[in-house]
Amino acid sequence: MNQHAPLLEPVLVPFASPDTIGVLVSDVTRLLRRRFDAQARSIGVSRAQWRVLIALARAEGINQAGLAERLDVETITVGRMVDRLAEAGLVERRADPADRRAWRLFLTPRAHPILAELQAVAVDVRAEMLAGLSAAEEAALQGLLQRLRGTLDGREGSVA
Image (tube, rainbow, N blue to C red; front, side, top):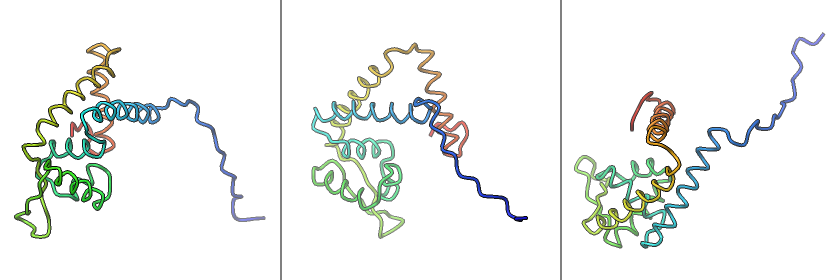
């Protein structure tokens, strides 16, 4: 008699529904980004540019490694993105007083009008996205998404 249990073939089960929470969140994110991209392009800003500018507006003084982590890209990729924005006069690098090898990233005054335009785009896109929800539904959705993010970040209830 064989002492080992027979290996079972893995059974691939098709997804029960194409609208799982993960798929829905991914689809909404993709569609939202596309809509924002189209409007941002109309003011002359690419996806790479608006992502960096908005991330810096939220965490000015961050270093390139931290920015790369926030954007979920490689540090070298962020370096190139920042190079282009610096050449356009929108971002500047300043020496990190705590680490001579690192640079801190800051927006220049020239970036602020662009951020104001991006904010207006965000307000328009958000209004379009939420047009079919009541204020209570919007608040509930936001609260649930914050809880999910906190759980996945390992910080239950986080509002990061």
